[in-house]
Amino acid sequence: AQSVTQLGSHVSVSEGALVLLRCNYSSSVPPYLFWYVQYPNQGLQLLLKYTSAATLVKGINGFEAEFKKSETSFHLTKPSAHMSDAAEYFCAVSRDRGSTLGRLYFGRGTQLTVWP
Amino acid sequence: DTAVSQTPKYLVTQMGNDKSIKCEQNLGHDTMYWYKQDSKKFLKIMFSYNNKELIINETVPNRFSPKSPDKAHLNLHINSLELGDSAVYFCASSQGASGGRYFGPGTRLTVT
Image 1: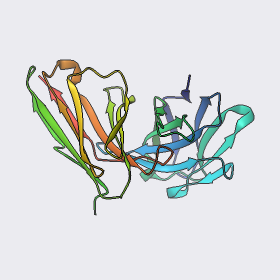
Image 2: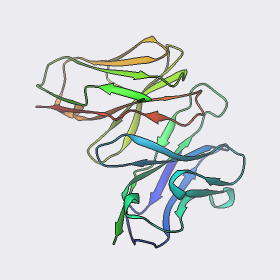
Image 3: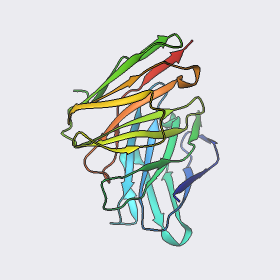
Image 4: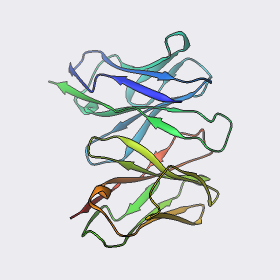
């Protein structure tokens, strides 16, 4: 079975501080991994995705994530938080690699608050 | 130009009514989805269509019926609405099953 665990439903940082949002997955096959951001009353926006190329994936808005197979992790980081980064962040994992199914399983989300 | 659009954005209705939500994507993607986000923001796949063919139906009550008239459109019809159907419904699309999903703005359904 596929599952995604986001550690910490709420993360608070000061503006300019490092952002670290944690995601661990369980998968019996190499997965595809995604991070999405959701601003209030909006849809989800794709930040970045890992599909087995480079293990360090760079995304939009200065975010990046590193795939660590040994730790089954795909944590999201940003060196310096900005007020506009305040949002809900979702990690997602897709199994059915190479098939047309492509079920995407989402974590429960992490609410990021950025303090001035 | 909006990549994935949904109408309506808000839908308030009474129990027992039938309603529809429309979705259109102009990205040229071949796969479209419906997701449900509950009050705790948990997202769950409902349906997936690939080239107008139903691929995934995740134990959704048969009161929910998706229809894909063409690759660019995926509509969701809900019969006999119940209080528990209140949620935000998101349409999404991707190129192939492994592609990143592009989400619409969501439809907030409130059943009273």
